[in-house]
Each structure stands twice: as C-alpha cells, then as structure tokens.
Figure 1 (tube, rainbow, N blue to C red):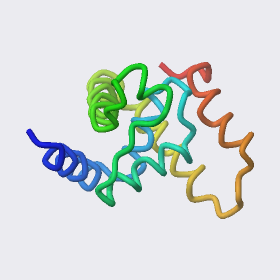
Figure 2: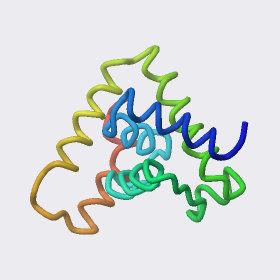
Figure 3: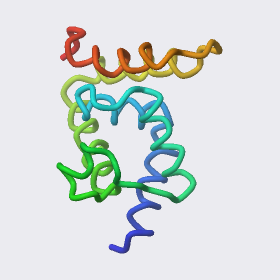
Amino acid sequence: MSEQERIRTLQNKVRKKGKYWAVAAMVDSSIGYYSPESSNNIIKDLMNGKVYGGSERCMSLYGSDGIAEIESDFKNFERKESYNAKATKDLEKHIKILLTNKRERSWAEQASGGLLYPTSGRP
C-alpha cells in the first residue's frame, strides 16, 4: 500500500470514529509521551495529508515512520476497545473536555494531561 493510501485509510478511520477517539488513541498508546494537545496537532496534520515522524517516540519505535506510529496507536486502541470499551470511552470523554474547554491550558497542564494518564488508575 502506498504512503498516500495509508494516510487515506487513517483519515477514513478518524472520520468514522471521530477526532477525540483518534486523539485518545494516541494519548493511550503513547503511555504519557503525547499530551492531548500534541496528539490533537498530529491528527490535524494527518487530516491535512501531512504526517511527520520527528518525535523521539516515533524515531525510536517506528524508524521515523509517522504513519506506522498512528497505525499502531489506532490498532492498539481498537484492541483495548474490544475488551474494555468503558475505559476507552471514558478517555475519549476526558480528551474532549480538555480540548473543548475554551480557556487556554498552560504547557504544564497539557503535559500533565498526558503524563498522568498512565498512572490515573485506568486499565
């Protein structure tokens, strides 16, 4: 499958499942590496047909293949949905609250949204 076909497949999944689902998938799979805001930026770029692989996480785990990173995150989140749909829905709701709150969040608040997630007691 070509790079553009892979991007279109991911874009279709975001359209089907929703932006907040996609952001939640990246926050969940990165176990705190990505904040909700940074994940949201990655998804915005994806929807505009641009995928970068410049983060440490992407470089070390996916050989700078940003498409593979997103594919993996979506696959892992779908797998988690299959055995714990409540946890994935709860995270999606939490992400929506963080991203739709009109007040600007500081860097520290955004970082803690990602960093605290793995230890927040969620399965």
